[in-house]
Image (tube, rainbow, N blue to C red):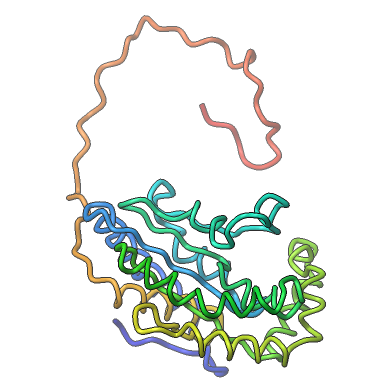
Length: 273
């Protein structure tokens, strides 16, 4: 790692962020090849308060990876049928097969967080989850799954700054949901729920890792570096291959006139055949 530069606020400079992001994303590609070659089943889940940066972190980690090997799962509100299923069932249906990595943007820990705080589940359901979840995760580990759990930690002040930023931009205004609005009023309740969740589910087989997410760029890089440090892998990147010259083309072939094709209007740039 080269010397990293930071600005006057302690944030990594854009140039060095992009430099480190490229380096770590390259290593993630190597990990991807290894997971496929070894037939590993990797589950990486992200939890944290609203606006903690879960989606953005997953996006930066998976940006250069093969979507046929690496998937991101962000489930919505459960359907009526899903509410009648075994609680974990809607999550296990998205689990990786051998040779795959699945990232969960929120997971079964919804029950210990938003469902409990917002009273979407009963007291009995909540207590049952806290007791069963460690056993469920131990079972996954025994079955050979590699389970990594990350909690992105953000302060009330930074969360509020991000909420206000979302509202100022029409492209992100949709991100502030009614649940988010209510969560702003229940900061302490969410803190208590998180502390209880950690106390019950921070097990040796699948410990929680807390990421300081006050500066999003740092959270991206630190999380990626941590994943690469936890999962031992070898570089199976294919060797650089020299492409042979294109074969001679059929010179008798006449393409149809371009006027017969429906081109997108040239609002930007020029169309090249």
